[in-house]
Image (cartoon, rainbow, N blue to C red):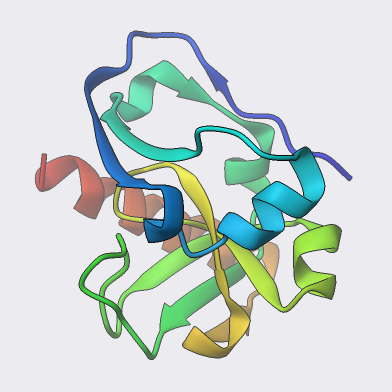
Length: 135
């Protein structure tokens, strides 16, 4: 099932954070979408400018147990997971990382936590508050 995130505000401070062979999932991108000038971009958008039913209903979270300085995840931090059956079949998780965007990361780098809806909602709100105070 495809997930939809709608950005209703401007994306600012866009920068290239990886290109070509510097993109970890380059082989998967080429296999799925073909050759191209692949770049991984990072930008900033305020949380109030993003709408998503997925972020409100997330019941799975990822705790990072293996970080890489080039990625936007930090050791021992908790991140929401978006459902992506195709990615999970390939051993990947779609995680909303420090950039506020969703990216694919290897499942082995995280502990997956399943929470009942009430606890998931509380954790998601605390992540949003922590994110907004660091910007």
